[in-house]
Image 1 (tube, rainbow, N blue to C red):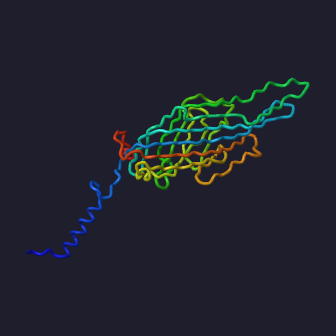
Image 2 (image 1 turned 30 degrees about the horizontal axis):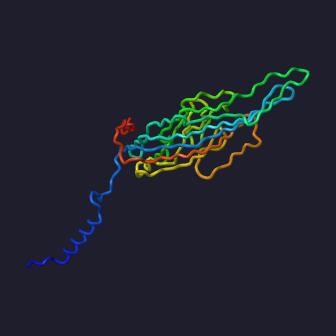
Image 3 (image 1 turned 60 degrees about the vertical axis):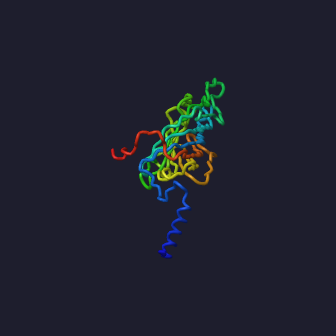
Length: 277
């Protein structure tokens, strides 16, 4: 009888044992993420920003007004979209449309008047007319506009219906944010929008597991004309001793991205060639 070498039996036994430890149908090779990756995800943005402004032109024995105005822009927008990424360089999604997902609520928290002194008749003065407006909220993910560092993700959202605030019940000036390239505004009209950095790399979206989430809390603070968008511990907003024309911003937004499947079955418009144009 022909004898089998002892070392061959040891190798064969070890190989068979390793094979038994691997579930049927599972490859031991590491799966690679394709250059163009598309999957379905749930995106949810909730929170708001408040602009508090001060107006003061009170005068002795002359018509004048003083008020403190509060402008609240709140969103609660949730929906499913296709997320499409190309390598770690580009990202885009469809647009979420959430009826009633955005609100603009403006009001005066304090109001005073001055006027002509007797025997002169007082002039007729009117306080700003503020409203509470609710409309369709829209949101989508996009590429972070900053060029330095790894390519990252941003989110943009707006209110598309519901009417507009009266101009005399808004602070009314534009904002230049830090970091640059983003947008912070009141959602007082249907043309206004907000864009926020998420501190999420595009590469993180590509390797996000099915049913896993990425959650970010984004804060807003500082003056309305130069608000700072940041993460981390909340910086208190000081509204004491405000002067005429001054305005401060204060806000918090929570953004959640949850991957729903491995690969989307529907085909979108490829962004693979966008970077080569």
